[in-house]
Length: 168
Image 1 (cartoon, helix red, strand yellow):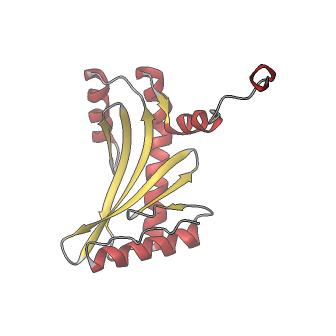
Image 2 (cartoon, rainbow, N blue to C red):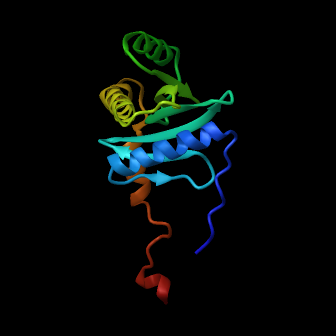
Image 3 (tube, rainbow, N blue to C red):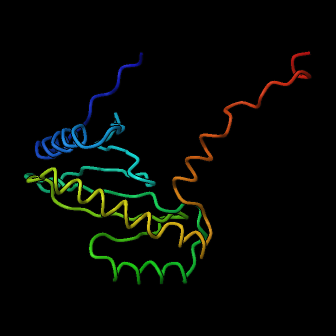
């Protein structure tokens, strides 16, 4: 088995917040993936795929960002950007963003004093809002929900099936 590279923390606070998030995730969710090269976690929460990243903030804190992969392969347009800005003015926490052809929803907060309740509430908010709007965005502007994209990718065979004609 290949050895995983060690995590590279930029500050002691980033490492402490990372370990607190990992501990809370171990206690709160059934399954999560810990990215070996970055200070990131990935998990499926309801019908949403979430990324949790921890970035240093000055020397004594770290920012926790919870990001939902909302819609992929959407056609960027002024109408879509206008709607995302309108939605941003309506949601209580977090914001939608358009990066290339992908729509994300994220919420960030300082993590030095992280409590389990704060983490689970943030996960629920991001997942709920992403889930509420992803299909509406797909219906109006195209693309696919992130979860549908993952499902399609998992169904693709890595190699074409071998047929009888191929064996001869």
